[in-house]
Image (cartoon, rainbow, N blue to C red):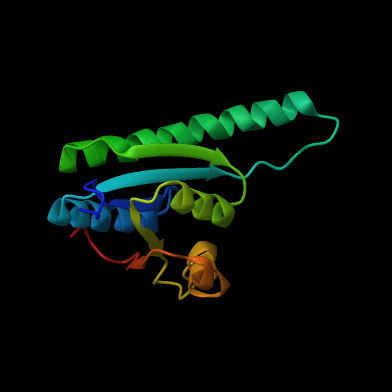
Length: 152
């Protein structure tokens, strides 16, 4: 538990990759071991379509439905395996900016947990950013889970 008597929170960025599933598995184990909670963040990156507002709204609506589906699937699993409902958040913007905003806004976030593609030796853009120039801005530990790990 954190110093304020509130539970620590592990922040995961939700996507449909197998690397996310590995990060989710690991976060569930860490949460159970430390009586922590999990926060799920899905960031939608919507490109603006000039002069086609109705198409942009349809794209945004479809992205939102897909994001909700991913979030609720992961939430159900977390609830079943930890008996705690996770914090869920769907935002629109740049992933790294939204992650920094979340960490700043919620002081109980105690770690950022990311899954990395370990098969192709390309860890992914988010992992690459946070182990590079984003690391200096990060004020919580970064946990990188190799995507090839089986359920823990």
